[in-house]
Length: 532
Image 1 (cartoon, one colour):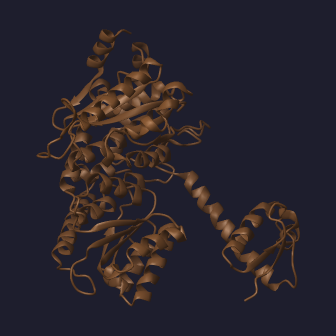
Image 2 (cartoon, helix red, strand yellow):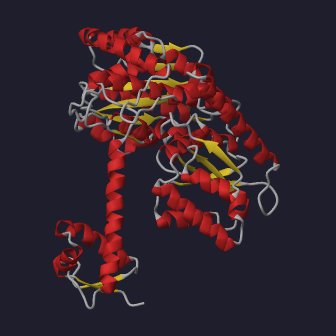
Image 3 (tube, helix red, strand yellow):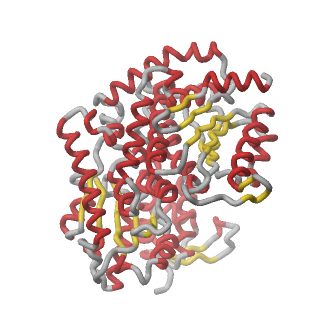
């Protein structure tokens, strides 16, 4: 196409929401009218599936669960009065608690107000709150936020080291739906120990966000924690940002959670429309389907041209990949679906991997996130060249990269926000939640479970059980053992590599075993108890 034909295509397919001032442009995806027409029956079914989901159908058949994250920002749509009331109560409780913390009505144990917020969680319990904090937290928030989102001991030490003299002013939120997920459980154990060593009562600083009746709720109630907020059974971690999981950290940082919810609710209304060309989430899902031939054959490269949105690609990695990366479809057929997601930010991308995007392997499509407002209102932008600001450069490089990619056969989508505020971020979250749900219907997979994650957890548990047996065997054995001898004694010669990984890790940390010999020749290593 020549430039005027491309301009006409842009105008024909441009979506704009006047209330949110958000644009969605899929014109640089190379789809054809026959491809669009072929997808209309699938979209008719996808819209019907989504309507049933919002009405309370079991949309997660593998776990027998409803899927209700859309109700979180429109409680009136919840299928029962009890759910409706629970949502409304949770939002009001979040706001009340945050106000008490800000005012000092709930003081830190040593007196005065809380100044720091430590969030312990993993997956959706961290990625959403981290994205929102980076995007929306004020320069001087009422509480400075910190995260423990892994089970890395060095990571614990670094976070706790930064808080060493501030534990007495730190509010700790532990988020875990079941209460038994190892990573947040481990973080909680280590943080609680740090409080004990400092002589500070942990319960006077602790808040839980968890499922009703979970191990974590029982612990919080028994120990007299400050508060317990719910994670509803029908909300998954990757779609929990508009639940207390995301709202509580946001409110404590001074972020307008009502605006966040309002933006999400407004986008939900727009993406509820059963009309392909007038539904922005459907346009995204159609573009993903066509560019990847319905099989995820191209990766999604997410490039927000705004520093505040740097973490959006990490947030989308979980939302998209955990939802769509499935081995079987709803009929039990093996399909191995998914879309890989990665990203950076503009214009850092220009000096990192745009070279490959432009000239290398064409196995991707780009999603540009444009923000029209350069700075906060009232802050002037100086000219860095005659009649050119830094923001003009940012805009020019976005347009230039988009053009350069398209001219070399590389497809892209552009989502444009008016500004980065709570309303726009809420809308952006809702847009992609719906796009993922619609795409999942197009390819007929369950977007709301994660059996692969559970498989990894089970395998990890087996490794730790083997480690316990290994330590007992080494301690009881007189003399040294080789790896083959140890595997034979444990009755698992087929797991000799796992044993090697275990003993190498234990040796490096001075725990229980001593390795001698050439590390490059594992079969000849000598394993013996480490002297006390």
